[in-house]
Length: 334
View (cartoon, rainbow, N blue to C red):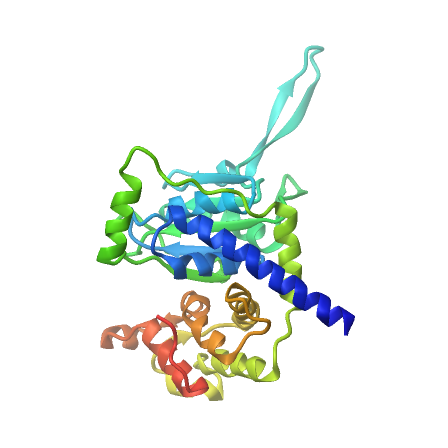
């Protein structure tokens, strides 16, 4: 009983801190509350987020603000077609000492940080993109046979331009699966754009302030994993994920629409993100509605349309929404 009371107190205290963090972020990243919630949810889960949107929508500004608010050491990499893996991970150089002796010294790359911004990640070649695979999954990199741990915590927030734009490469499926959520950043509404104009073109701009430290974020991640999840929510997650797999009996009606569906990592991601959504909303446990709300961010990048579905003009968002309605009896959040 005492442990449960202590957990409730920790969740309530954390909810207040997260409210302060969101307010600080929203002063600089105006009118995109859902985007902020999804990125914060990814960080609370200890995961990575992929922000997809056209240039100029504030994705870089958001990541820079998060680094300040969450108290993390951040680095930024601008991905370009000529970027090499060593430009991300670092490399060993041969140095000659004053006495003439030679030795290799490792020079760390920008991946050795706590919050890595991979800007326009799909402008680099697949070989360079794959340099992040081990870092994102294992929080370490292997260089010259030596394992080198990264910062704690370690998060990758990558921005991506829509694949139809010239000069971009599709991300490998294995790397897409490493991202906990995909966050679509859309154009702001007219009222929001008016607020942005007024807030960002004057003599002074609003500044974000630090709310968390690295250790406090790690502690918050521990609290989230202790949050209870009811059997009804667990079954809803399984129904949804298995209902999106064309090879499973639950998803057989999608056999003509999907080339492949989400794997077990998608169910794990849903289990974590529904807790984060409840925590950000000030609740003590997630609900089935949270599963419906997190369906698109968690599943979209873990599925692929078949050629026939693309020819018919179907979309992954539409398929996910129909599956949510069929399996959960609810509407997915746009």
